[in-house]
Length: 293
Image (cartoon, rainbow, N blue to C red; front, side):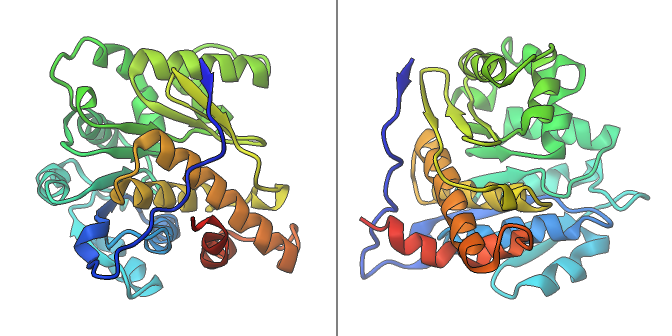
């Protein structure tokens, strides 16, 4: 296991660049009562530099999600009686993913048997890098699903990066065994990433990023960031960096560092107690200026 040095810098932009050069991000999520989560992820993907950002959400909350931010696009998906994405959305997601540089799934997703099957299908089948967070992680933890993926020879995971961003509780469910302390969780995270061929971001104080071969421990962030929506911002940010052709491990390292730095700048101006996730989005631009090469 090697320890990574400082996170990579943001890539330079050619003066003749156009939006297609920076990738299309597709974010799948949202449900009745949790539309803000996918909206925050979409805002972060925009601020993170993705050229185009599309949010695929249940049709019942499309208008609400679209009203948060005019710079991303929204697409309605079939929904169920509880306001969550329905299994019938598979075809639409596959079609949109075919033109995406990176797909994210999880913010505000909700939980149902149909969603569990949909997320597991996305993990195995999407022909693009993908980031999984929040309830998408709970779907991947169901019935020891990831153990079975090891036996799928043609799974998309063999060709395209998968990034998982659990907090400790979500990782316990993925791991399926007791974790008695942070050190045990970090060692388990290394093993998990190596076994399943994923990049794992174990969120918390000094967030760990590992792909099973190398690891990095983040140095930015503060307790004010322990607030609802903060993880959704991180999901959008990592997705945007993968869209800009950073390798998944580097995108995760830089995304976590940038996310924490933005939170530190926000806390310096607003204080830790009053910090909310939207503040982290708003301070991404000044933080980005510190990350330029």
